[in-house]
Image 1 (tube, one colour):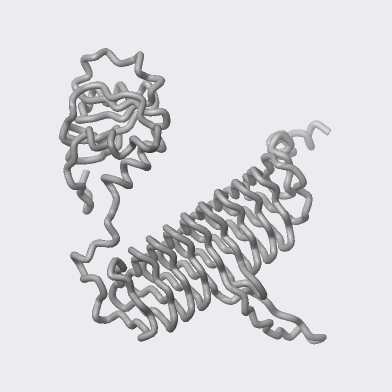
Image 2 (cartoon, one colour):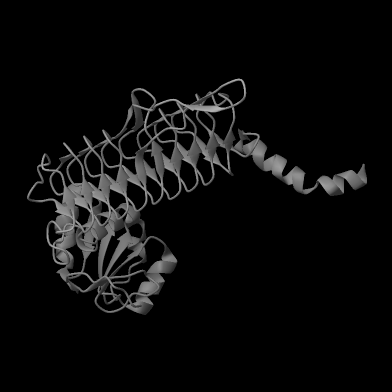
Length: 349
C-alpha cells in the first residue's frame, strides 16, 4: 500500500508510556518490538502496528503477522501465546487508536522543513506579534491586531482578518478565512475552505419585496478542541455571538447561521444546515442533511437521523428522531414500511 506519509520508527514500549495517563492500557503481552509502520488490519505486515476489536480481526492478525497488535482486553482469552507478535490489551481500541496515531502517526503541521517558519510571501500586519513557535505558510494574510497563540499553524492562502484571536495550537488548513473579530479557543482545527465569520443572512423587505441588508456586527466564538470540516460556513452574529462550544466536531459542507449556539461535544454530519438563533444542547448528533429552522431549541443528547427536518420547536425531550415530518425513530421506522407498501395497500382497498 503506497502512501506519501511515513512514520518515524519507535518501540512498542513507548506506546505504554504514551498511554499511561489515559488509563486505557490493561496489559502488555510479549517483548518490546520495533514498529516501522501503522496499518489497517487487512493490510498490515511485519514491522507494522495494527488494531483489533473483534475475533475476526485477531484471526486476520495471525495471518498477517504484524509486529504489534493493539487488542480489545475482552479478547485476552482468545490468545494462544503462539501469535508471534506483541499484544497490547486496552479498554477501548478506538480511543487507543486515536491516542497512538496522534502521538506516533500524525502529520506534523508545525514542521518548518518545506517552507520555513514564515514564508516570505505571507503578509503580516506590523501590529501582529508572531510567536516563535507559530508557522505561517505561503500567501497567508494576517490582519491588524490579530492575536496568535503558541504553535499556531496558518497554512497556504489563509486569511485572518483584523482583531481575530487564535488560541494555542490552532491549525488552519489552506484557504480558510477567519473573519474580523472571530475568537478561536485552544487546539481548534479548521479544514480547507471553511469560512468563520461570514456575514449572516440578515435582510428586511419593503412593500415591493425589495431586500435591505441588516448589518451583522457580532462575532463567532469557538471553544476549545473544536474541529470543523472542509467548506463549512459559520455566520457571524447580528448582535452578540454565534457560539460553537467545546469539543464540537463537524463534517464537510455544514452551515451555521447567525446567533446559533452549538452545545459541547455535539456532532454535525455533512450538509447539516441550522438557521439563525437556534440552540443545540450538549452531545446532540445531526446526521447527514439535517435541517433545523430558526429559533428552535434541541435538548441535550438528542439524535436527528434520516434527513431530519426540524420545522418547529416540538422536540421537548431527549431521544432519537428522524425524517420529515419529524417523528420519534420508532414511528419513523414503522411509517417508512407503510409508505413502501402504499401501492399494495391501495390495490387491496
